Image (cartoon, rainbow, N blue to C red):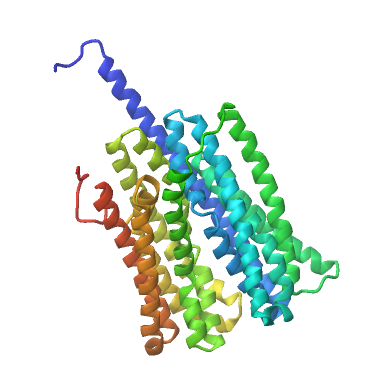
Length: 454
């Protein structure tokens, strides 16, 4: 075919390039918004941890930290994968103009997550009651209040996924990670100032109030914005399709949460509390580094779905490679900054915690190396391969447990750091290879160029 003389092809190509540049600019801007919010939230969390530890003392703070860890693990997994599923299904349905199915998913996700979270809370209380001793000791009040926090936490996690699916990055991230965290800290300081005891049950009560307020604000704003973009049609439900895709994603979320804490769990069994404390502080500061990947995922995961839904394979490949390169560069920069500031950040907890700097360096190195492999996990969960993603995460959880069990006796707390760094890198590599196998998309670190066409 010859070159068009009326300029139609030139205009079409020009419009496509404009759309691509706009798309990339939107992804980059959303990523920066999410990253800035997560950094602010991390700063709030860091200050809150130091404040609460000094305010409550080691025993009460330890109880609160334990309760909060379990709220986070059970809350993220109680969405049954519908939070991530929203980023997969909603953009694709909207790209096809299927508003009925969009409305069906929104309602089904809220119902499923709320119901399951309540069931998990009740089952948890039943198990605690059967165990007996926990409800007779200092954990009684915090546990009862935590059962009320869990459904609210889970619903907010689901709303985050819905907002992310619409590319509303600030609305997705600010309420749970900035507003809620700030309210918890302010409520605790205010409660103690008014005469409440600085105990764990007070901290959990403050968490309950803060989560409820943040959830109400986020839900109200989200409903208003959704009404503006979705016409009122009768919802259509496809439970079998959604559950088949979302449940493996939920299993991955549970495995991922366990993966992030397995080192501390095994250390607490094999090492004395002082060693566990040194390691735990290093992991709290190291968490600043993966925020880059979180921000990139929050800004681009749902865009992978939208591009794939319209069949733009070259555009998807370009977006993946751009995201991978920028994420690695930003992760490396943040990692260097965290290690450089390590002595100061660790010293805030006390001079003895400066000994955690080598641990922090190893953990940060693992996160930076893992970021080389690009968004393989997002590709698997967003456009097909969620079962394989769940299998890889479970396998890496088992590997991390084995490495910790083998290396901790030989190297102490440094063994746990080495084990988790290795497991993080291998997990990133496994996700990247799986994404290449399923979708034929290679991230920059793989010795493969272009896109494999099955």
